[in-house]
Image 1 (spheres, rainbow, N blue to C red):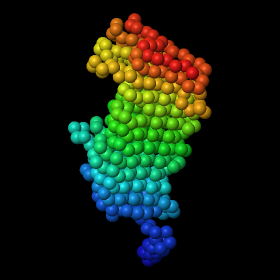
Image 2 (cartoon, helix red, strand yellow):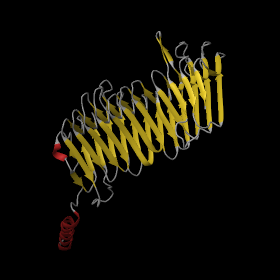
Image 3 (tube, one colour):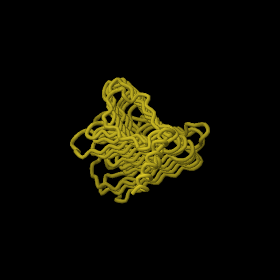
Image 4 (cartoon, rainbow, N blue to C red):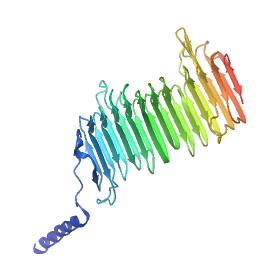
Length: 402
């Protein structure tokens, strides 16, 4: 018995000594959210940080500042300085001019799960009307995962002027959402940057990136992947979506439209796959696509007999809304250093409607398709399985080949 007591004393003494040199010998207890003030402003941790919001947001502020940093040396074994936000409401909610900054030497991980599908909550980052602050995530990887019928990875309400940045220093920015990946209705910018990795957005039912306002969304990485249940990229307001792959490819897969409007530039390849329209541009909008190789594949399998929705198109410039025609412009080749050496459109319409159509490029009479630089190889294939209209190009607008 005496030997056992001596051993216990030795272990306790060793722990006490270790705390004097390296800090706490036990892991930090999770922080109980929500964080609603500046209590955690300029806080530095040498371990993982966990903020549990429960039925409330993990972080929810108005004009306060929250700044949490993890940095080396990391004192606990099996930890890497990750910052984790868990909530059943919102990961981060900003209601004013406040600032939220998460600097993780490891990763930033936001997880939101909503069981009540009738409630319009559950966003990873939520910004309210009138807010004008800044939200910044700096980490090796930044990951937002939200589960719920109305859950968006990032949502900004109309009339806000908040700037949001996700900077993945060594890995990826990833957004997994049941609804929209990014739903931006504000006036400022949302930027996802992963110079050493990828930007990855996956949605179950909503759009990959949705802009309904004058704000901009920019994705810059080695490679960008958008896999959406509805539109890959949809822009309904005066804003712009810019997608740039500095090393690899842009891969956009959508259940409906592959792309609304914006700029897509890839050093290697743009690969757009959709179930209705590969590129849909309308209004006073311009779309730009530039890459060594661009492929648009559309396969429509929905048995829809409606004459307004039965068209499968690789590129659709302009659409009729009621009695008003709106027209868009598409420019192929915008970067002097990149040339579209290969441009392929493959459209198949499997609809049962005899008035259905499969069109490679569909243009309204005031739309413009313009090419810049060199397009060495062009292939347009349109197939209507059930005997409707099939056209490679349907032109009522202007085509400029330069």
